[in-house]
Image 1 (cartoon, protein in one colour):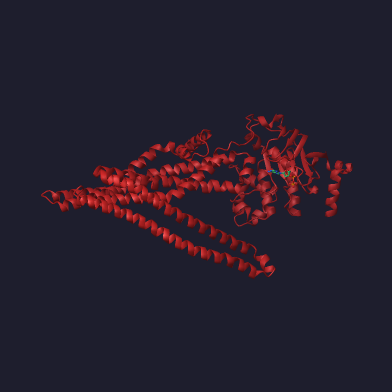
Image 2: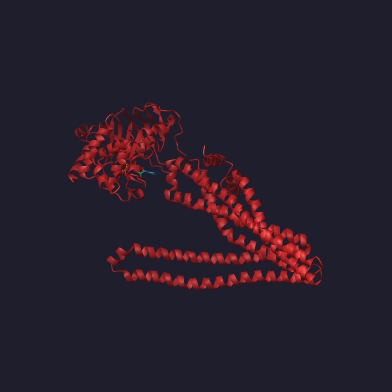
Length: 598
Ligand SMILES: Nc1ncnc2c1ncn2[C@@H]1O[C@H](COP(=O)(O)OP(=O)(O)OP(=O)(O)O)[C@@H](O)[C@H]1O
């Protein structure tokens, strides 16, 4: 098996570990990176070597000054040794920096790909109810933005945080080995300066955030103005609209100037604090050198390392907001990864060749978090090959019946059986192979017409494709397009008419040669002529197959074996078209209403 896939599956297992509680981002990161420990250790190793020029430079500079201030007969030799060592340390940076990035990047990319893939798998397995709760927009944001933020967090951890922490640690060790008193000075002054600088930075960040909010509000006002343009123009309200934007602009301008001034003040305070502490370090080390406690050249060494520590602190403070954002994203990603609300049916019984006998046994259903009984105590026996049409007022529960049949939701009470096997025990993957579904809004994806028709079936012959194209009355549409079946249809079929989209969805159902067909208003968007042709094709298709249709126009279900009239989640009456008309009940009234409307 592909190695990366193996690692992805490992990751899935990791997230099955319930001990990985939400709210522990550090543990989450460790779980993510544990399989890549080798790469991480190698990247740390190469980081240490590649960073040596930064540490060597202050030492070599101090050595050279010390040699120059105390020359003897070995001085020239010592100068050359220092220069050659520095040159070697510099040149090794070329391969070691690449090796460091190679291992760090490999670890990060593996984790990123694995995380995305685990999330996508999880999304595919979450129940429809969970999807309804998470809302698709929010889900997209999670998969795209949050994974990006976690990837960014990883990069910052592996690059900025690692380099800052290492630089600080090495600097402190070198300073400690050179002079304990300078080390003590560093130890006392650095935390104070970090505290002051972080206070200034906090204020700068706060003022920036305030300003960004103002700008967002401003863009909201402008885009609302553009959206409202037709209404504004139709009522001659241009001045009102412009005044509204002007007021918002004036506020933004004033706030902007004030924030620029505040930012200037805090930025310069930040810089001056930094410089003052550096000056204090210079003063302290100069006094030590004057007293002869340290060699003169070491002043440069301590300046260099003080600077390096302060730069590292600055770097950490810079990446802090991004790290905080990354940790927030970890929270929201774990919300999905640890969501146990997966597909409700987990049965494993293989149905064999499905005949299409379906039983609803006292089925009741309510959507989650809703007290409303959408279906109540519904029983229905459907023979293999029978066509059952559901009609009834809006909200009567017709589409819900189809959702239950597909297995998107489980009945709250009662059960549905397929060929005598309760859905609970059924292997849904096998069952759904014999289902074809055409829902109210035909769902197409960007790609060619061919891709959309053969979705999930790679080895379909050209002949078979044209056969269903003809059956779905699509040939004239396809032949008029520049690339025929390979014409790209744009996102969600945006370049096609509603009728064309629906016909593609019908062709997709036809090509599966299913045993059970589920149609929700499948022919509603077709014109009279093509609807007639599709109806003919449908008749051919549904012959011998169990079919469930939800249709609002009663004319389309005249030939159904049985029409079930739904009312408030219950079966009000059922029978053939003619039987129901003769009964003069609900259906008779609906039919009369539609005929008079026509
Ligand atoms: N995902 C959902 N969550 C909560 N309630 C829902 C959900 N889907 C549908 N409902 C509610 O369930 C009831 C039945 O809806 P359903 O879509 O099955 O009716 P319908 O008979 O197909 O209506 P229409 O003819 O308008 O499509 C409605 O009151 C609807 O508001």
